Structure formats: C-alpha cells, structure tokens
Image (cartoon, rainbow, N blue to C red; front, side, top):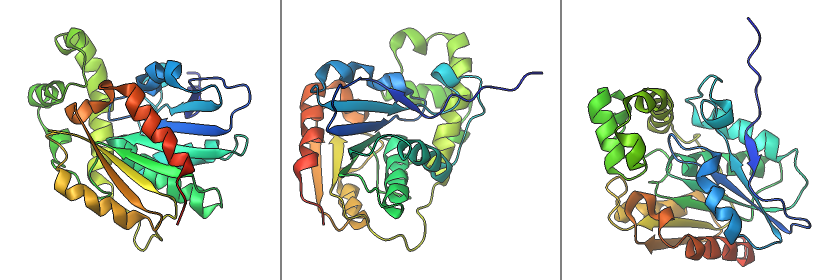
Length: 251
C-alpha cells in the first residue's frame, strides 16, 4: 500500500504581485480553505490572502484527521514561518479562532508575532457553550449543525454527503471541546478584534470581553448581523474592518 501524500496546511487564495500584508484565514469546524474563496475578489491588490487547509477535507480528504488545536496551530505556524517575511493578520472563525490564537502564540515565541488577531464567532480560549456536541447521535448532531446555517440546504438532505462530512465535523468539534489554553502563556502584544454575529446561539456576547485577557495590545468587539455564520453578511465590510487592523498600534 502506497503512502498518503501530505499536501501541507496553507493554500494561496490570491496572488498579489508585491504584497505588503498577508491575511491568513482559519476555517470553522468542518470548513476548508475554500470557505474563504469569495474573499479573493474583495482583497486590495497589495494583500496576499492565504487560507489554512485542515487534514481530512478538500485536497487533503484522504489524510488522517487532527483533533488537537495546538498540533493544528503548530503545523500552520511552521509553514507560515517558511513564507517570505511580511506583516500578517490572522483571522479565525469559530474553531479557527482558537487555532489562530494558538498560531499567534507560536509565531510570537519565534519573534514573528502577527500585526493583529481577529477572532470570529468564538468564545474566549478554553470555553465552549456545548462541549459535548461532538458526542451526540448522528441525527441530532447533523440537525444541530444544519440549524446554524453552515451547511448548504442541498447538502443537508443528502445522506451520502452527510456520512462523508460527519467524521471531520466530529473531529473538529472534539478538538475545540478538549482544547485548553497553555498554562501561564504570556499575553500577545498585538491588538485583538472579536467579531460577533448577533443572535449566535453558540456564543454569548457577554462572555466575549474576556478575549481582552489574551493581549496587552488592545481589544475591540464588533457586533454584526447574521448569527454564527455572519461572514455571509456584508463580507466586504468585514474584510475592510479586518484590514484596518494593520494600522492599529501594538501594545
């Protein structure tokens, strides 16, 4: 039996000729690098957009799943450190927010802290509203995820596709549920912005202020329409706000 080819963790979404900034996007549970394909047309020409591809989906579908946030972050950070040196903003949605946070810590520890960290639709590190969801029976598990709006209606009723997607979804949600921040981690010095979709059933707005504890560089909370998958609401406005973070002073 031949070896599985491992394709790496980063996928270029845009190809800027002379980039001054790199935006690195970390997908939600069950998501892939293509989750951010629609952002390409909204990026300025001097911004390089890169998305993280977790194992077990897209062009890495046959690779073993990884259900450990620090391990995911370590792989992503290692590949980012091999890219040309430039300012970076890390943007993570849901599970991707804690993977982005851990990645920022790894980069900071090597002297390459990002210009900003953007955490979307996610409680502060180490918290999750329902940490047992990945243990639910298939039907209830699938119904819950479909109710959040992250699964297209054409897929929701397709039993074969459901069976293909369930393992990655469970693995990602298990990674999120079992993640605990490293004890005694020094705060970041870059600014942190938290994006909250109003009415998100998984994230209580009142708990988001505690993201401020992960940095000495300033914290901002932005509330947007759209619930858990608010990224689909005014993507251009979200991207513009993310890009403004490069001009914020660090702590």
